[in-house]
Image (cartoon, rainbow over all chains, first blue to last red; front, side, top):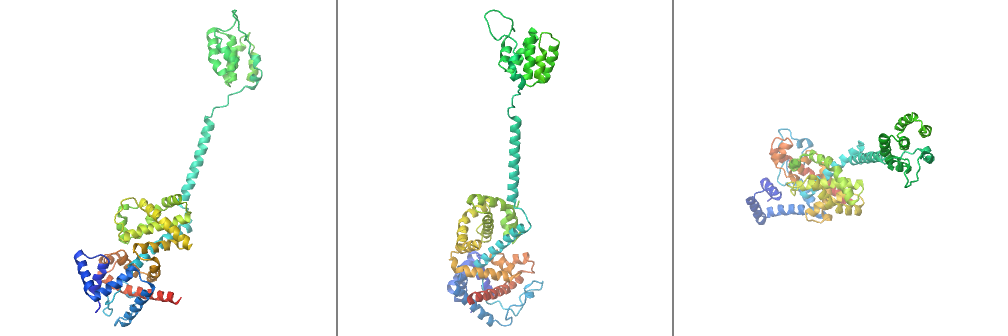
Length: 266
Length: 190
């Protein structure tokens, strides 16, 4: 005698781990003591542990026999009978005596393959829609960012780099003509500034350093040569406007060769 | 971002959109990571990502993963790391179908059986279920894979009651058996 519908359901639940502990024990006892239960259980165990090809063929042959033996319903109803319509239920002529439990692991594999196919479909749609992979866009943006950073750094570097010192070519070529004091020092008192430092720095063509001393010398001591040197020094560092103003002052002073200064300003 | 707390519940309830969301959200970081980690080309990175998502799905439906203790990204990375070698080996061996082969191996290994023994069965069942179509596929998948009860299936698939689904399940199984039988016969003839 085969298992009843209710027993099939119980075995189903047992194999799917849906039974409470007490019910599980009852089923286990039935499997151990009842040959029909044992057979049904072993069939499922074979399925679960994976049937070899011959086993599957045998099982399918058994199923084929079972189909032939079925009365009333005979074969599967049409597709429409599979659809729920509110009144759907098992037709009376469709027996349920020998429901086989499918290979759950094979169903699991199918389920995974279904997901795989869906994911592949998504991937294919991405490609056919011409969706640029996010990674690609990100790489492109990253590249753009790097390029912008490089440009910024190079620009800042150029902007912040030490500027080439201004070079007044004429002055440098004719500088000796612009040293008008006696560079030879003597222990004897000689005419000259009260503070030689501006003059000395000027002779060394360190105009930037010389400017404050020369300015002081002019403002305190009214040393016109210091004023001349100051004008030259301004021209030497590229501050031509200041140099021109000094030139205007020098034009009013007869003892200074203002023409000499105007040469380096042109 | 997909609410990570209810991902498992949604998958078990048969919500198919949740995997698509995970796919879209995690795709780029995963592929970027796996390419860096294993120096694999883009196409292989995509396949490994798909494999990781599928294994994640399997861990949920098989009851192995009941709660996410890390982020979904971390979980996928972990799977990727574990499966990368297996995939690479399958890919090299067969030159194609590395993903299918890795999944076959994965299910067989979990079930403690030899892959060669179950390979035909699994492929036949896969093809059979595809031919079966809806609503049968949803019912069988829901009952046996997602372990949903008849009541849950009736509610999800909008049937009148659990008995209706139970009867449909019976008919569907018969139909599936027929399809598988025919497929098996085709293989035997060859």
